[in-house]
Image 1 (cartoon, rainbow, N blue to C red):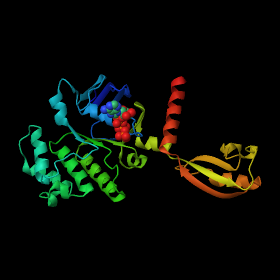
Image 2 (cartoon, protein in one colour; image 1 turned 180 degrees about the horizontal axis):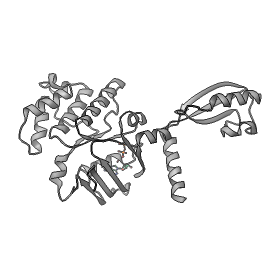
Image 3 (cartoon, rainbow, N blue to C red; image 1 turned 135 degrees about the horizontal axis):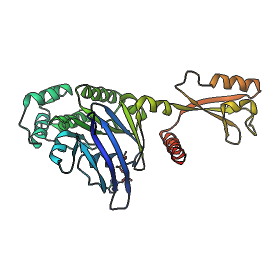
Image 4 (cartoon, rainbow, N blue to C red; image 1 turned 45 degrees about the horizontal axis):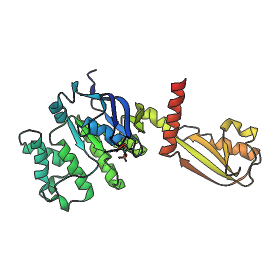
Length: 315
Ligand SMILES: Nc1ncnc2c1ncn2[C@@H]1O[C@H](COP(=O)(O)OP(=O)(O)OP(=O)(O)O)[C@@H](O)[C@H]1O
């Protein structure tokens, strides 16, 4: 394992007793100090994967190395190195915030360290609320308390399971800034998300998982080039029986009995091809009465990535 790999997952798989194959064998290396986003739809296996790494779920096979040490034979080491912010908020709602966070540290066998806890709470803008009973805090603050609890034992690797599910846009931005700050302080971050936008905003690298299979792992910039596809729909005045040869170079398709012309383009390219397509349509005398563009849905993208992967494997 190279020095810059902090976490190494080898052949990790999981079948639940119900028969669900939640994870096909997964191999993944996480680099020290990166933000890694695990992107995938509901039920893809994201929570299962991080729950196994965090020692909450038993795998059906495979291994995990945390900073070079097997996470089962050296489970104390793994526990100390890893912090987890779960999807569900779990906390004693009648406890003052400061006690809850301090207790989380002591649970790991570390001596109390009020200075360190103060630093954590200040960095999360929770210090002023330290005496508040958790029940009285807003949803966003409760989420930050969960992060403070996970950081209380100073883990090197922090897992965030859907940190922004169900939070408003403003809070989502706060959360992103916070995660970046933690990374800048040296914590390796692995987060799961449904949102392409979140992966785009935050991650250094992205892993796409679908139906228990890690379809790809790529630098964010590379992946975003692939994901930046959009479709243009043109409602035609007169339906077409077939795509005219003069439009062939844009490879459009016809839908809705020939009354909608669909053109897929790269929204991030300097030239999308839309202007030239519209000019060619005008020259061919094809009129349209309405148009709209839409981003490929996450689902479309997954289908595309899976197809792509199949073709690669077949080649
Ligand atoms: N305890 C369990 N027993 C049986 N099946 C389970 C269990 N936990 C998860 N699964 C199944 O395993 C698959 C992967 O679930 P998992 O929760 O890991 O996905 P996820 O990507 O985290 O989804 P979400 O985004 O909805 O949280 C799903 O089909 C799910 O129904």
